Image 1 (cartoon, one colour):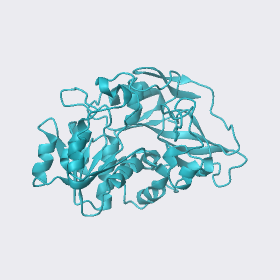
Image 2 (tube, helix red, strand yellow; image 1 turned 120 degrees about the vertical axis):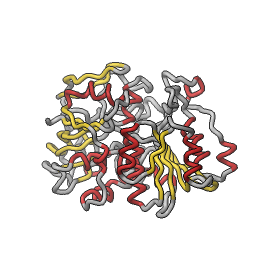
Image 3 (cartoon, one colour; image 1 turned 60 degrees about the vertical axis):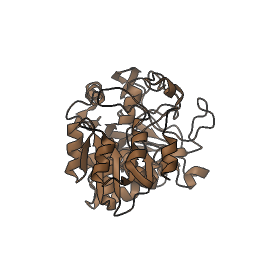
Image 4 (cartoon, one colour; image 1 turned 90 degrees about the horizontal axis):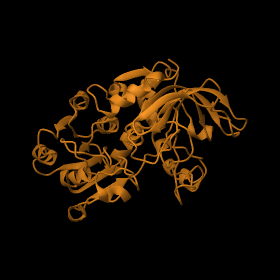
Length: 384
């Protein structure tokens, strides 16, 4: 089968690899028809993680079931399914608590001791191949496959967002503690930041501010009713404070991660975290889903080589703020978000700029990584 294979920093290719297949009785085999390029993939694409050469990318996947293991009861051949990027067992202590991002059964402890959590095609999260390929093996398929409504095939670009970024955008507003009638500032208008803005609108936020500097992404934020703040036109904290009468917002969301950089292109891992402390009011809440890693193989800030950064803890403490952080437990949200899409209350596909055949993945990675104008979200179509 074909797959997007990582050969080194900024070098991916569509190559033939061994077919994914049923390996255990609880497995499900899915023919992938839609698979997204995620901002998290770019950390690996740029060589800023220890993702292995020869590994297959792709953790935002949707497709049709073509085979099931003999122990699979609920999922049937022919079902259309969205597949959470977390791989969970469904029965460990964390999965039973709804923390599917921190599964104890599927974690690979051979690399990271005491590891919790697994994912498809993701650095340090197990040996599981990604779904930017023709086929994907889904372990514990009854638990991990979200069955989709009858309109799944024609609305793939909406439903594929259930694999990661729509639940992740929802999750960061939960981590921040957002409630109806509150204001929120979101740092980062990439796909996850835009999904956070979409989630905040659905939840009834009174005001949603989105900070970025890419005009195409800011236009998308404005298209759903958010207030766009261009940090290349002035200090973003000052702009937030001016809009909120000097108080700051009730909540804040970090949707950038450790490769945050200023308008001049200089990287500052702590930039958005410290800006959020300044932008959010006293006693406010901050959610963090931007990726931060324990080791950075190519840090621009030497301190961040071991995942450390200079954080304005004094001001954070003084303001009595709270921070929630961590990967999204997709299964905690994906059913209700699926139903919002089916009912027409949510349309996460508004961020999609390109739907391309799998063969065009190398070019798509190059454009998306460069943040080229108009490349806001790419959906690859292996079956095209």
